[in-house]
Length: 56
Image 1: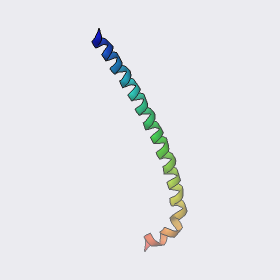
Image 2: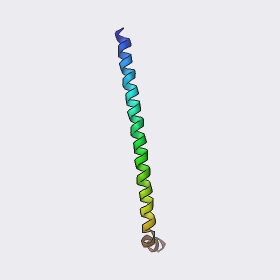
Image 3: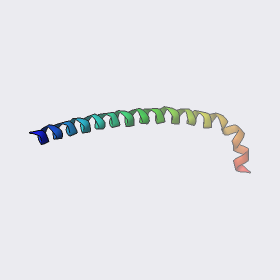
Image 4: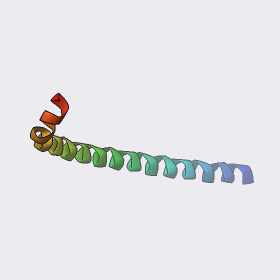
């Protein structure tokens, strides 16, 4: 009966880790998306200054 109890704990731990990982990945994805959109805005603002540099 002890092994069954141990496997139950392992399963619970695995589920907890899985959910925290999913939560972490989701929050990371949202963070990257918001960061990426702000970077796009910055690049759009800075295009006029960098335009001549790139063309020359």
